[in-house]
Image (tube, rainbow, N blue to C red):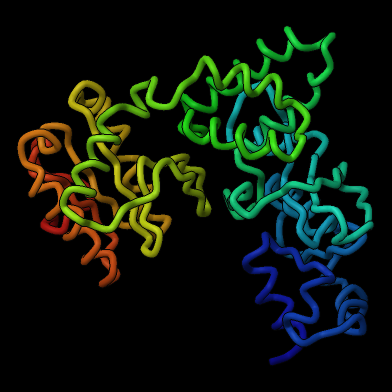
Length: 338
């Protein structure tokens, strides 16, 4: 393959961008880099990034260029991550990126680089093609700004508001918050005092999005001897989707447990089906378990999950509802839909 075709193959999936660290991956070296720039068809976009001249500048391209120029290992950080995830009160005029300590000492004119020591794999998701901290990890970074006693009360109000906003957007669960406090406290993370106090007022299962129905569902699976699922995981892909009630450890399968109280009006249904379509577009099979079945038809619950797993293994990206679904047909994404 011609060297420029290799550049184009990378730029096609990176908003028209190619980074220096991509060169070994595509079998090229610095000679090809400078040759590309001399042609005029590739323009410098940073110290270690070029872009295709034919690729129009976009906000996504600008943000991604900052991350690539700060790489390896760089992700959107703190307020920039929260802005990218759609939370209000933050912007991207200055791009903040985080990079694990020890990977590189390079700087970039495109972003403000923070070296961090506790960036774990599950702290990172990909949204709209950009690697970013999860909302919870980014909020921890914001909490560190209020670690001193003099700013404690301000921090409680500010960070509490952020947590509640992220929770409403299904970007944070209270169970995940408590897990992070237990984990990061042991690492001596700044902001622990604030986060621990806020977690104390937000116990797992204390909101409709983390209801006792999820616990009931887990009990049904355990009693039936079915393989367990993982609770409250963020789902990324190229579109921000947020957290799903359950995900399968081995399959691209998500499970939502729906109550009748919060999922039966036309507005509720429209919102749910938009979410299911986003999950299908991101490559997931969706299993929807309805509240009545958890109490009166537990065998149907287990059978619905088994059916969804079978369809997922066969590559079907569909929506499988348990029998208690109160919505009239047709249902979006169901296997019987035309």
